[in-house]
Image (cartoon, rainbow, N blue to C red; front, side, top):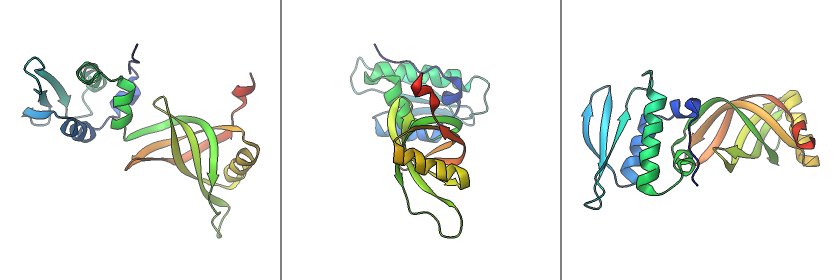
Length: 182
């Protein structure tokens, strides 16, 4: 059984340019384009494999998330991979996302203020990933405690994929995760 991605929030933040780059890298080529509306892609590696996907090029369309869901369904069948595997390669930004994980590394604090970068090992699209973020004041102190005592944490922020690394910008609501005790 393969997982299906139906979270409209996640699907609506897939950037058309990232999907185009993925399609090119995986053997698809653009067949047609209606400017500012849709691009049509095909993959004809085998004569019986004449598939088409329709990529909306404007994220503001009301049905953008639905069209991305349909694209994910086609890619899942064509590539015989789970939608989670595919989407984890496509995701570039998710605003105000909640991250659960553990603090794996604390960088040397900044000398001019109580702050510093940390690495969280957390779940992004159902896979454990390293996530870098910068924390300030009480949140930074709490991160040090979580690191020293190996306590799970939760926080929110804007998740951005830079190259192959994830960065949590505007981190807030940093806290020890009490749910693991229940």
